[in-house]
Length: 203
Image 1: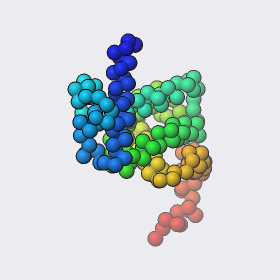
Image 2: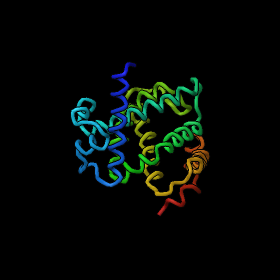
Image 3: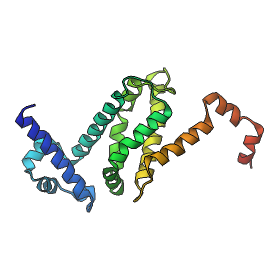
Image 4: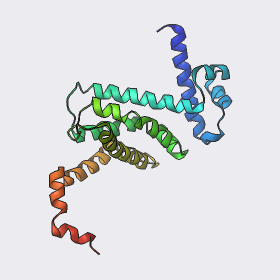
């Protein structure tokens, strides 16, 4: 990487950090490109050389997150991860970015990030194995990823919206305990068909 490329990457990061700093006191809609560029100490011309618009900054952040998350998955050296492994990796990953996530939630922009990140879910599903993954059609895999990733994004938003979020270990412990109660699909089905389990739901 030459000096020009390094400067371009540094400028992209400065602009991203400037946006997050401005979001602490303003809504995304009221922040102008000029304000972002001024805060970052670069020109508007530099901004538009690196980004299409201010939404492109959020896409850049999302793509950075995917790259970092994939790096952590690759560090597992191809071993099949358990539900507990994946929960802990996911929660600890986002704990590191909790301040940025909190800003995005407070400003009503978290959905932009989660939508962008969800677009990568199919590739992650097929590339990295997990015990509950199925071999299915693209549509079937879309159903599974929509269910699993949708739940994770909702969890993330609920958890990190708090001014004082609990530690990731506590969240993981709760989720794992819940999944252990469910057990595998066969046991869960058998459990739910027992007469006594139906009674609480009967009118």
